[in-house]
Image (tube, rainbow, N blue to C red; front, side, top):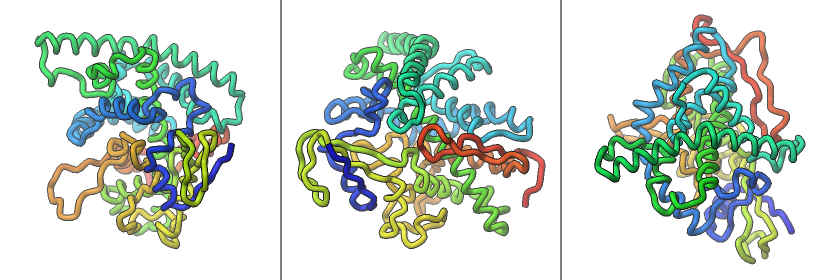
Length: 403
């Protein structure tokens, strides 16, 4: 058994596109991750992804971005604005959970503080599953915590959400309601597709939990890093702040550049499905792994130039995505990338509809709310998960010094 570590962008890009290497990053978190989309391979992966891709379309993204997300964002931000301060991590958990729950298809009928706190507590426990392989805590205790969280999620949130959608699908099949009356979310797409609807209920429950977790947790870390990087940029370029706070191009490019420098997972890992010879690595057996160091590959000077380690939203990357390999490539490229960070406008695109993505959308609202460093409370890094993320990031909002 050997682990082959890859640090170059070109080699990492080529390896992640290979169909004979399967996902191996989340093996330790099988209690949640074993049968979810990101861990499936081959025909099973294609079937599940095909069903879910029905809602991962630009027109549906625009619907959420223009109709659903603004309402949820304003409701979540209001108490923080009233308080004049917030912790970006805590705020991010709440707003990204609500935004992602809408798109996943997890109902919150009460819309109460208690209901939100209950779902957040569940997600915080489930969030320990993907990092079980790197955590410094008691893994048996963490697995027990994850199991309890899954049971709570199933009973309070998943089963009622599933039952409501099954009733709506039955009404649609009987002609009592039209296609436009059905929810446009992942859970409805899964239940509407015979091949995925026939899967065990526990698998579908964990798939819903995974989507909620992936959308909320990866995005919250990206959001906090982006706020930090943008505030650092303003401090270093004070003459630009007045203009760039409201510049959507800058904020979206900042989100993309942040994703490059701070991938949600520092590495990704693959395992051969059968013995294979790979150029530069030699012969690999199914017991071997290939680890692509995303932090290193995304900062490869051969691809991103001599300032690859620096944050520069105006970086010219040629044909390489500004976010690097952070959202993957090939069959396992992140299905929700456009929902998270949108699509940069085309040159000459004119007035065509713009898709910002949830993270740039939140950044724009925070910038409009005069987000700025907290003068008395310093940000703190996470020391538990083994990943270089923020644990807390206090800021001020509203009235105060601004350019």
